Figure 1 (cartoon, rainbow, N blue to C red):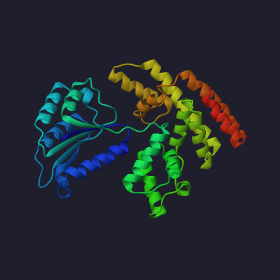
Figure 2 (cartoon, rainbow, N blue to C red):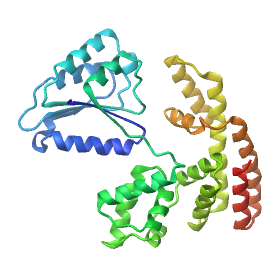
Figure 3 (cartoon, helix red, strand yellow):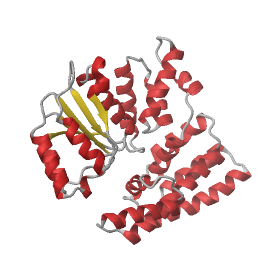
Figure 4 (cartoon, rainbow, N blue to C red):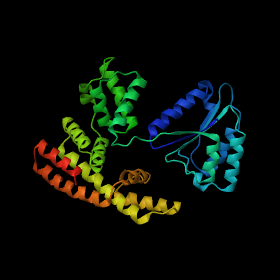
Length: 328
């Protein structure tokens, strides 16, 4: 099947796989003629459907990319007919690739039609709280890049970059240059890799899951990396405030109407102080399994911790207080 659907919220992995497919099917000498990318619009869709039926020039195959394709839910009968004609008559030398941020809606006629003719690949971000999968992903990346790394260094790097795949590969590139053929050790990670808000997200997720062991490990690692306690607590407070806003507004405005959903997502983004309304979808997933009362309870304790942090206190005291959040 020369038609592909790549979907998921891991933009970096999707980019890498687009590049991989492009290298596989498009000859570099004829890339200017045989590779095209079209923005998501009705006019661009028509142009893309016409081009994908055109035989490739010179050597190799033709690849037409429709990135962030958001027209599946709004296709009219004319567009559906054009899509069906294209998929049925697609030459074996031509490849059509669509990318989507979220899983295709199987209830739509357009999705059902595409699924009959497409290879589908999922590229989802690993949940920030799933430490073992994050460590495994570091191992997979270092194996793919042929970069040796010790187990403690892999664990620390996983905590540092969280589920940010792009950041992981960027940090591994830096680490490989410093290690110069040697195995990457903990001190390399400590010297070069900055703790990101993703690690704080892992901490927040562990607290929500009442996982005291993971909470202690992540919090201790943040302290070990000289992350200021005031900053950790302030970041947690900001995150939980955003989660509470999203959770409350989602409960007020659930609907199957797409237009209303889009307006509601914009309203939630504005209220929660989120710059990109598309992020609301992922924020909803992050708070789906936790009640708003639990979020408010944790928030109240974080505000008390924030005051304590500004007044000063021992690391052991803050560690015990953070662990207490898991038992509420």
